[in-house]
Image 1 (cartoon, rainbow, N blue to C red):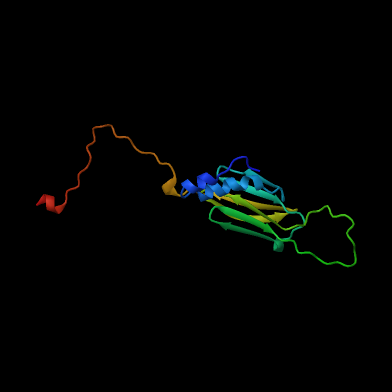
Image 2 (cartoon, rainbow, N blue to C red; image 1 turned 135 degrees about the vertical axis):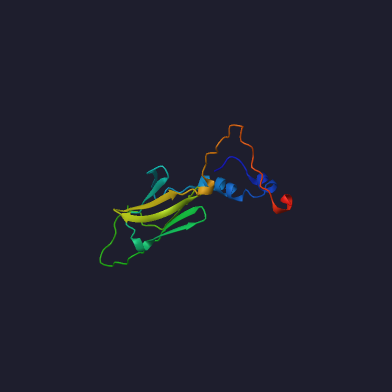
Length: 152
């Protein structure tokens, strides 16, 4: 439970809906299924989700805007030949969302040994990357381009 109320801020701000919804979601973070977030390179990341018991056909991944959603929907098999005395392996449906930073794209996903690996890469466009600016020595005069109207 959050000890403060954000309602007054909703009334006096415009355009911060995404920020407020992220703040609202902090107190309701689910613990299932467990996951790791790793940095595998300078601009490479990996999310690993423990999805033991789920097959590829029972998992779905969706990347929309800056949100990655992983859903699992376990298909229940009716087996009348056996009776489960104790069920400690979680096989419930889940949905886990991850907020991705700008320019982070999903490269691919793989399922091995009950772990779902989602590979991410941050690809910053050339126009957004920092660039070096040459500094003149002060002797150079700016070039003035003459137009035909000025020459006549």
